[in-house]
Length: 113
Image (cartoon, rainbow, N blue to C red; front, side, top):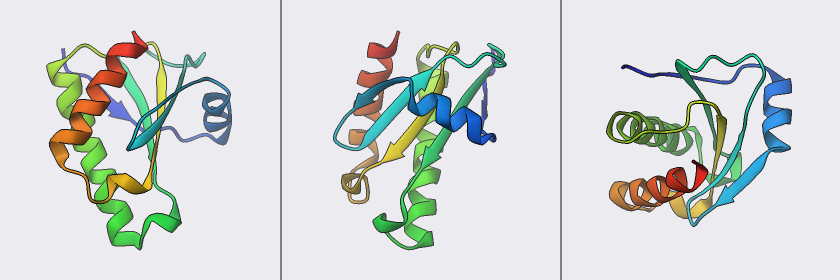
């Protein structure tokens, strides 16, 4: 089954996610919560990179890497589609290896179940 990544659009969705549960690691802070109008066939996920982490090129690179990682993780493992996710990047993610970020996200996704 192919799972499609959908971005959160509404301000209310972001506010409700920020009131949800939190997991944090070296590279990211992950907020997750169930949203009422969500379907279980899509993964609602958004990536936030603050302006203080770098210019637009660096911020977009971080977002592209995170989207690519989540696509790989969804294909390889089973992620809980009942939740909506908000990933907020930390400063250490700029110089991190792709594989290191993937390992830490996998560990956190296993905790979420």
